[in-house]
Length: 117
Ligand SMILES: [Zn+2]
Image (cartoon, rainbow, N blue to C red; front, side, top):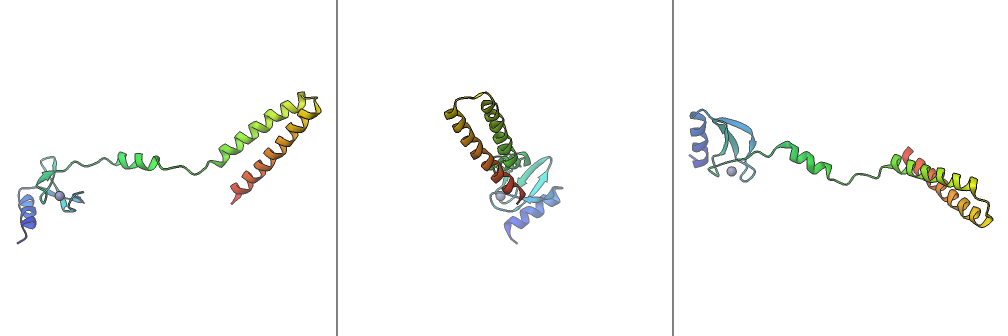
């Protein structure tokens, strides 16, 4: 008989319960005995990594660009330029503000188009 299997049988006879999780090192089913988790193959206690840690790793993945956020930034800029436009009387400055507004409105249109896909 396989030494590993006979050890597992010993654990069961001693009242240990076989868990659905396996040893991260050797993939042998783990046993719970007197509140501790053991791997009979490695002959050692195994610490179970809490699920919180995997969730943490997932959160660190880069998020896709947030279009609604970009849209509200552009809208803020447009609002600011609108205020400048209202106060501005120098034709050169007006020209610049209007050009920027056109660019921002174009950007806003693009954001809204992408958002619909
Ligand atoms: Zn093991």
